[in-house]
Length: 173
Image 1 (cartoon, rainbow, N blue to C red):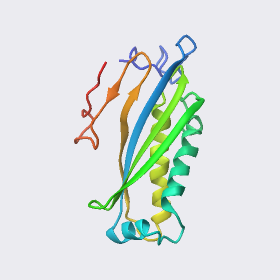
Image 2: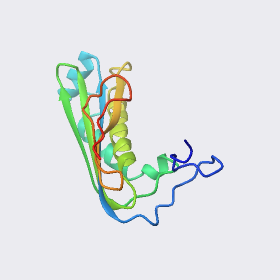
Image 3: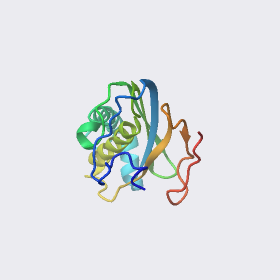
Image 4: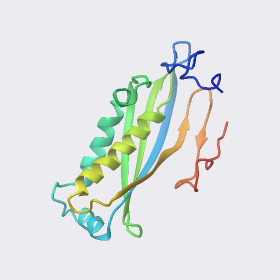
């Protein structure tokens, strides 16, 4: 299995992958996250009655800022010149939840899945931070990659939210 794990050398030691021989291609990835709140906290957030202010603006900015710092968070990630980061947050009234979609685009030698995941996760964490005074029991999750394009391995697309377990998600190659 170690021959399939690009982040391990021949001795099984973690390393940063050498991508210098790969072509620059357009890479795009989208990740999703959900934050579920109590009905009271959700209504307060939707009505702009949180003690810390505008939840959606803060969460969007947190996601964008975090995506740009992914290599600082994840030790083996390459620092990438991101061309675009979008963070969209939609309120799900029936579930008392906020659904986050983070999309990252770059022309690079390696994918932007981690940047999208970091953006979605940071936005979710910012939502938690904004509402924790009202609802300490809020739940973050699931979080995952929804789609990616570019690179040698081709397209990836999965339904969201995922079915139970990690096997969900058809890979289109």
